[in-house]
Every structure is written in structure tokens, then in C-alpha cells.
Image 1 (cartoon, rainbow, N blue to C red):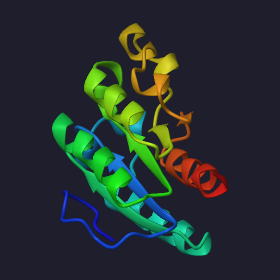
Image 2 (image 1 turned 30 degrees about the vertical axis):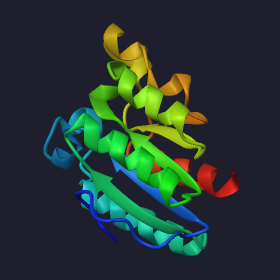
Image 3 (image 1 turned 90 degrees about the vertical axis):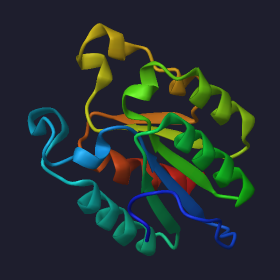
Image 4 (image 1 turned 120 degrees about the vertical axis):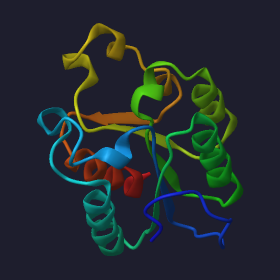
Length: 156
């Protein structure tokens, strides 16, 4: 499991789930725990790994604060024949046409993930460019949002 960073291309897996985390998610557990919870990104990655093993999936979890790295991750998912992508684009959800275009450019289903419920927060968070191209969205269940999204990805 690779919890952070973007590495080289590895062998194709029929049931690879790539988890891409956007800006500031590396601060989970410290950043506004009242909104985002106390679980760290490593805690979430470990829980995903356990659930992925039970579902007979291969999972890779990555984080970047850079929009282009997330676009590259989506392109890599296509190149590697990933089964699905779980994408928590963080604040880029509400601003990134580049991510929208990258999701539309690949044939891999993308599931949008959020720890909090963006619709219960500030008005600017109510718009998701990612949602326009995503297969679906799981939001508002804290760290469990990732596990619910993984369960959905397994059924695709």
C-alpha cells in the first residue's frame, strides 16, 4: 500500500481501486476535527486496505495538494486498467474544471467521496464539478464515506 505521493506505474490489476485524496487531506486528524473527524489519512488507508482484502480488491491510496497530480492520477487509473477510482478532491471539488475534464476523458468509473456533507456547509461548497462526471457521490459519513464508496466500487 502506498499511502502518500504518486509513484511509478505498477502492473495492471483487474480489480485495482485507486484512491486519490486532494489538498489538505494530509492534515486529517489535526485539521478541524469537528468537521473532518479524528481519523488520519493513514487510519483511513488501513481501514480501506482491510476492507479491500475482504472484497478481493487491490487498493492504492495517494494524496497530493496539487491539482495536476490528481489529474495525472486519473490518467494513470485509465492506463493501468483500474476497476474504479475513489476521489476526494477536497476544495478542488468546487473549483476544478481540469478534474472534471480528466474524469470525462477516462473510462474508469469515479466515485466522489467527502468526509463531511458539502450541502450542509457553506454555499460555495454546494457546487461540485466532480459530480458532473462521477458515477456517484458518498458524503457526510466521516471516514466511513470511504468504506461505503469502496463497497459501491466493488459492485460496479
